[in-house]
Image (cartoon, rainbow, N blue to C red; front, side):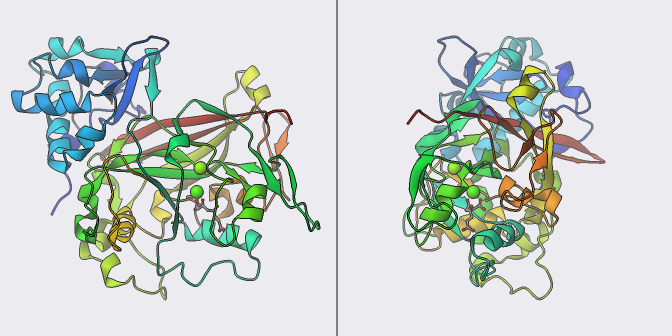
Length: 439
Ligand SMILES: O=C(O)/C=C/C(=O)CC(=O)CC(=O)O
Ligand SMILES: [Ca+2]
Ligand SMILES: [Mg+2]
């Protein structure tokens, strides 16, 4: 069965000119969802869809008459101050609204003038976390990250024997997830200095980022009713960029035996735009395991997952120091990789999460886990790029970084691109480190 439909046709163009420019993240084939309002206003936040450099205000679009009557309740749900009710409506609803918007935004659309009255420029907008995130789970799906970081934390046993059998994850903290633009104080906590036998308390000295994708659950499942691998993707609303800020010195001291706790729960930043799985359909590819690796257990395997379980999403991390920001120089690229290197697919993560009877709810969020690729320049965290801080990376302003300094901003970007298909972009995810609170 083809995953493609008329909304993916590469020749489609919009009556909004900026959506037709080469290199835009948001052509008419993308149509990602966010929650926004005019920056600095006290307007209510509402749902919108990106098109070029504009946002279609879905709360207005539901009433403007440009959409077919049967789609207006869908636009009204997606136009609320969080996307949860729309997410709960399921894949048929998401697909119907996407098709209606695609048709209404195409060149020559009959009611373009009505929809034109529902546009807000992205340059004038500010964003909110797009859903009420009830529960947040962070996975560990890059075998390269697991091996690299495992060597640093557990030199004798870098890749644990369970890794190739079970998708590893931990339960994170949903209420400290914020949208791109987040700034947070450097965390303080307990660490064990090298060679010491007792911990000290103070500001984190090894603050790191993690390049991840976020996966938003759409339709949930009741407790006791696992989702099969073949149904799993119908429960996924879409994907965003995610930075799992990590205090490595706090992590190294606290993580055994129950996993990360205060080292990762102080801040997590996501991009405002959620790109639907439907928009990503042209970039699906076969999911392959290296020869000799064990076949997944049957509940984690299916023909469809093998045929197109992986997704080719290009990813990059940039660092902008305070001095680079003052100079207006923009960020410098630290690394780039692709989501196609992941060891577990989105469908496997969701099937695994529910296999014990665990329920998922609309708006729940998964982190993919740090997305490091096979070579060192594809590493998704500083601890890997700098070999635990031993080999600092140089920056264009002459400074270097073993770990993050106060004032540093980390910018994540993601996009899909190939000949014969429209570019599908994720926008950006930016977060800034503030100095720690005074002792
Ligand atoms: O290997 C470890 O002990 C810990 C690794 C992590 O930092 C956990 C994590 O957040 C998982 C990931 O992002 O892949
Ligand atoms: Ca992580
Ligand atoms: Mg985190």
